[in-house]
Length: 218
Image (cartoon, rainbow, N blue to C red; front, side, top):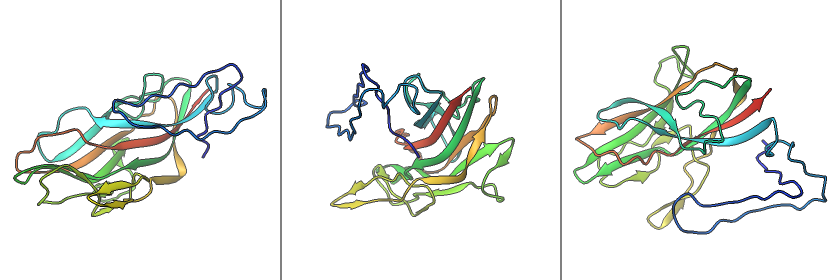
């Protein structure tokens, strides 16, 4: 999977953090002028880009159930699919995989919300599970009193390390689809987090989900 960003002669690449302070590390190769073009894959003039589509639940959960990931938080230059939008005209989208970390959105009580499944629905069919539950994404902990990331069992991981107290854990790698899921112009896909509420929790919007997409424009 090619996720490099070609920066052609005369172009500038700007990088900024989302909202917090900290450091950014960039790993790059240098090429002779002309060896890298803006029309190369992922370039500013390319017909094909591979990117992470970060998504959030748009409507604040008030009870247990399926809650739709229908709000894209990726910059507006990128398509919003599958976050409540269809594939744009003259575009084809391949979903290469999904990354995410199961979580407990918890408060003292214990009160709160916890993920159990991630459900992909296309044409009223729940993909990957004939029982219609979805893909395991379980972080339930009825004793939790603070927000936390981690998994009892999940087929979807973030592929990144997480600091838990004094230990660093890696909850697992992203779930990659082989072959990729292909969506033509006008296609729709709905993705839900199945969430269980304990008591009356307060939603902190700590969901951490990103779809790994390749968008090809014709």
